Length: 124
Image (cartoon, rainbow, N blue to C red; front, side, top):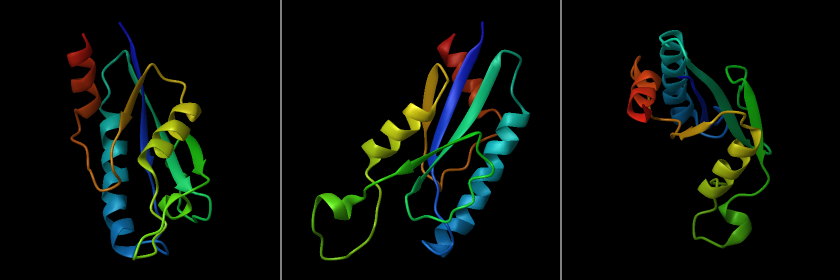
């Protein structure tokens, strides 16, 4: 049996959030490591979702998607920040996907080397 996953991640640039971008580099490397450890029959594509004005490096991803709005476009808040809307991240990421299963995680969540294989085992 084979399992194909699209792993959606909302990425940021150092200009948007320097501290988060540092953590994100660790996360992206953990994606690479987990993909190097895939069992036969398990495939993964990464979908990097960014803000329309972002300069984030998305070269690690097989697919990309762009967000056209942020929370500031739908409501007013005391602090002005262009935070993404989670449903938009998922909607755009899914549109860019070609896999059977969707995985979503935040940019600050590193994966274990056996992450995708474990998900495939649970699906069995």
